[in-house]
Image (cartoon, rainbow, N blue to C red; front, side, top):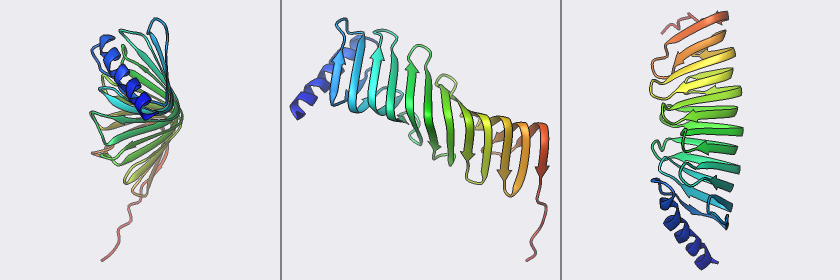
Length: 208
């Protein structure tokens, strides 16, 4: 069985560079390839490595020869090769090579150890070209010293800016803010609110 898996691994390394400039390597318990070679199915503890990320899942399908699309299901885990501090978990994933867009849904959980943030959501879209993460559906974000709840959360990775929409609730250092839209910078803690519902600021000072 180990020898068979090695043959599959070597076959995949040799054939995929012919399809595009990006090399993809993998390990899987089972592989199926269509007659034309434009559809590949991997099943069973799949590990797949591309230039931009490493993928773990129970099932992966790859379609296309020049501009590929990738779909993964069940226990999906993504590690970004360009930012090893980031990790993504979901039940379903779709990635388009031509648009460089990743879509994940089902029990989405995102970690960024560099910024010390964890985000839970129903779904997300990641635009690789501008490094923008869009989370939707009962989004809960836990930072090192703040916590947010919203329907939509957009995280601009380059500027460390959070854009929160839909019944937003932000708690920062015992201060509560509620609004329909809040802009919050993870690094500077600068805060901008629109369509404010209410806010509570604790101005108490402790005596020494």
